[in-house]
Length: 264
Image 1 (cartoon, rainbow, N blue to C red):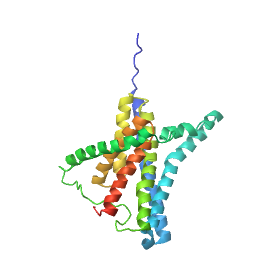
Image 2 (cartoon, one colour):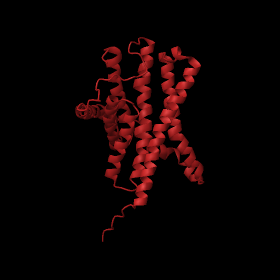
Image 3 (tube, rainbow, N blue to C red):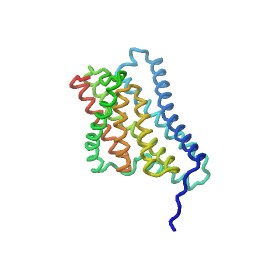
Image 4 (cartoon, rainbow, N blue to C red):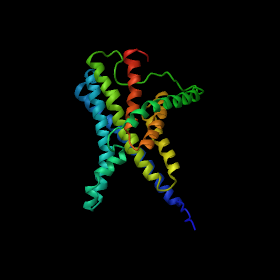
């Protein structure tokens, strides 16, 4: 006789739901808190004029991402390891965590090939979502995004902007959102419901938070679509390497349009 599937109780579902909600709040609040703390500290030390210079904008972004990753990923890890008394668990802690974040091994040719394919899928999804949202009068598809750098930057300033927007930001955001957060949500939600639904819900929640954190409706819809594809690549490959490459490709194209072509 096949074993009957045991369904979670209402209490278990509420517990998982609360855990997921607190995880989302932890990530969002940590990023906002770090940005405010680093921003106000640098503004106080440098003054408004120097703070908006490209090199200090880059420092602000790098520090914010680094501190956010430390706060989001390593603080909970240290708290968990502190609670564990087994020395065996402590010895094997780093490798499973690295795999859960999606940093197993190295990028493959599959990752490289999936990045441009994912870019096409992303364009199709964002086109469909933008067409839907254009029916709402409050949605401004062409609203300019504040990126922290002047599009008139040249020379070294442009190089600094490129490294920040096309290299640092994609890596940091993929580690945080499609790495740590997506892995955590998939793990928590799959304890109560099927793998298929846990995947769908996790993709939606990660993408929703990613869109909200960008602060503008048009940008939020755009990166929501991007995140759906990035999460899908994480599911297909088991790592975040293809997602990082796709994210770099998307930001690189935007950088070229803004800084080289002058298209806003």
